[in-house]
Length: 307
Length: 107
Image 1 (cartoon, rainbow over the protein chains, first blue to last red):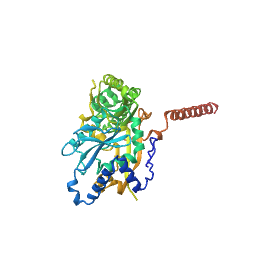
Image 2 (cartoon, rainbow over the protein chains, first blue to last red; image 1 turned 90 degrees about the vertical axis):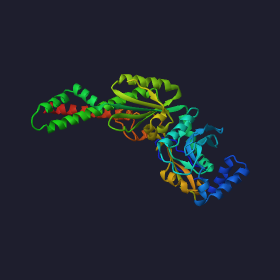
Image 3 (cartoon, rainbow over the protein chains, first blue to last red; image 1 turned 30 degrees about the horizontal axis):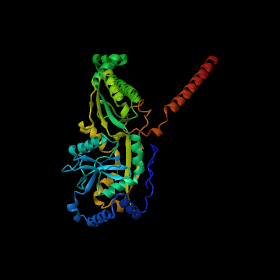
Image 4 (cartoon, rainbow over the protein chains, first blue to last red; image 1 turned 60 degrees about the vertical axis):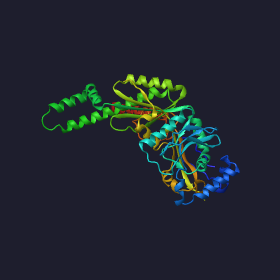
C-alpha cells in the first residue's frame, strides 16, 4: 500500500505495493462487483489487448476531473469533456471517489473549450463537495485503473480532503500603472527630481545622469511594489487560512496571489478585499473565485512498472 | 477602485494558470503513454511521488518580492530566528563601534 507523506515540504516517499496478483483480485473485489461482473470485466480486458482491436473501444476511456469524499454514487449531469457531452459521474473506493466522464482514449488538447469544461465540472462539484482538483488531461482506460489510483494514493487523498474541507481558493492579482507611479516617485523623491531636471537642462552628454536616474527609479519602483504587496498580504492574513505568491505576469502586475479561505470567513475576506481596493485607488485588482484549491494542493503521482 | 469578484471560469488565463500543472498531477510521461498502457493495474502501479499541502500562512511572502515558486516554508528560517540573529549582529556591531571609539579617544 502506497503511503502518503504527510509533512508538507518534504520530498516524495514511495513504498512497495502488494504483489500485483493479489492486488488485482482485491481491486476487483473492492470494485463492488459480483463475481459475474468481475468476470465480465476480465473478459473486457482480454478483448482489448492490441491496438487494432481498440478502434471500436475508443469511447471507453475515463477522463478524471477531481477527487471527492463520498460513499454514494453521484451524477452531475452531461457536462463531460469530449466530442459529445457525456454524463459526469463517480467511481468509488472506500469513502472517496473520482469524478469522471467517459471520453475517447486520446490525449486531450488544452483548447479553450476543453479547459473551460474541466473547470466547469470542478465548479459544479465544488458547490456541494470539497474537491482535490486533478490537473488537466488525465485519461484512464478503465474504471479499475481509477480504483487503483484511489486505492494506492488513498492515504494522501484522504488526508488532503480533510485538510481542505470547507475551504476555497481565491485569486488576487494586483496591477499598477507604471508611468503613473514613476511620476509619483519623481514628485516624492528630491534626488530623482533633481536628476531629472539636470538631464533635461544639461547640454552635452547626460549618459551618467540618465544611468543614475534609471537606477534610482528602478529601486524606488521595486521597494514601492514590495511595500504594497506586503501591506496587502498583511491585510488579508487574518481572514485567510493560507496564501501563495505566484510569479507576476507582465510588467504591470505586482502581485499574483492565491488565498485559501474557509467558508465561514468568505464574507470577511470578500469585504477586506473590497476595502483594500478602495484604499489603494491607484492599483487595479483582479479578484476571482471561488476556485478548487489548485494552488494549495500538490500531489505528484507516477506510474511504475509492476514487477 | 471598486473591486468585483469574478467567478473562476470567466478568464481563460486564470484557468490555464491553475489546471495545467497544479492539483493532482500524474507524470507527463505517463499522461502521454497512458494510451499505450492497456491496463495500469497489470503493467504498472501508481505511487505517490510527493504531496504538499500549503496550509501554513507563509511568513516570508509578506516581506520579500514575489517569486515564481516559493520554497517550502519549512526550509526558510522563521522570522523569529532571523530577528534574533539580527539583534545579536546589532549588538556585536555596537560593541565593536564602542571599542573603536574608545581606542580612538585613548590614542
